[in-house]
Amino acid sequence: MNAIRNPLAIELGNLTQFEYLALNSPLNLSDGHARQELTPNQARIIEELPSLWTDAVKRPVSEVEADALSAFFGLLGQHHYPIAEGRVLSCYSSSVAMEIFARSLAGVSGSIGLVHPTFDNIPDILRGVGLKLVPIEEDALHGGDLDPELLRGVGAIFITTPNNPTGRVVSRERLRRLADECAQHDVVLALDTCFRGFDTDAHYDHYAVLEASGCRWVVIEDTGKLWPTLELKIGWLVSAAHVGLPLAKVYSDILLGVSPLVMSMVRRFCEDAAEGGLAELHEFIAGNRAMLRTTLANVPGVEFLDPFSRTSVERIGIGSRSNLAVWSALREHNVFALPCQKFYWNNPDKGEGILRIALARPPSALAAGAAALRAVLSEA
Ligand SMILES: Cc1ncc(COP(=O)(O)O)c(C=O)c1O
Image 1 (cartoon, helix red, strand yellow):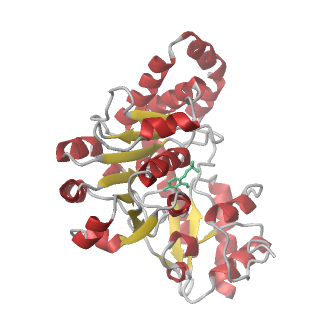
Image 2 (image 1 turned 180 degrees about the horizontal axis):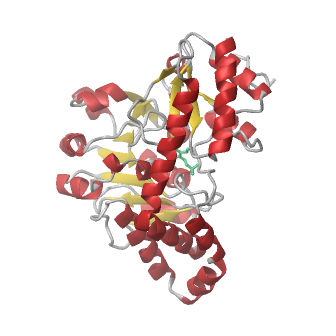
């Protein structure tokens, strides 16, 4: 029997398989995609789609793309993003950008250092192209220099910042030092910044730091976690001029480009965000996080593991209770959370006793899910 159909089976499915199970439930607190309601301003942008279509048909794709890039990177403080031809590749999603990066790296190197824990489709994609993964524990990553032995043995290091699920952000000073270390060892520094929109600590200009370091670097940006755009999103694969990886060739093996309609829609969401929508989103997520924490307050053994996280997911320590027992009991209430074992791709046991709850949801759904979670945890 499939491990997902029988949740008590020892072999767990991957996180996305758990997320599939939740897709049709109104109490889906599982995936990290944005599923809150549109704000009134955003709803007006959706009403504009026919005119955005008409406009996109008339204009050169490169112009539509340049406008989307400048709106997105400007919104998030990334003013030194590269504008030269081929330096920013637009993909249907960040996973497609990841696949392109992974395939490009696999042609020139056999191994990569990867932050631990992180979202499991990252290690799965990297392993899928045959790369050997070397874990970089999050505390070690933030604590000081990386092990030179590790840097000598890998072609790249890959860091998710803000990280999913912990929300930890690599500071400007830490990024500068990591980039120097990578330059010294001629290792590619790859960043997944898919969740950066949620945390202003991740809005310092990463591209200024990376360009100044002289290291070979790649960044994967994402519009998909911020706004409830029904999976219409862009993953951007951004790279150093001298990155030394065949990114453009592998890109051309996979796609021609992203829809100009999606690019125009993303531009409009960015413009609205710059005019106050982003601050509103930050307040919305903070409000949902506070509501979840209040609902679960004083349940014995429950801990909020990432007190400073501002991303749209929250890790909950559930003490000695089993993840899958709680997951199954929640499912009885039609509520879906995510058990965290698979985030710990090198040591799944470390994710036992931890659930991840998605916060980019309508407050009413989160409140119902949180109440069910409180009831389940109070019984267990
Ligand atoms: C950190 C991170 N990067 C990339 C992805 C992949 O995003 P997508 O499914 O939109 O390709 C995810 C998915 O949740 C993620 O958490």
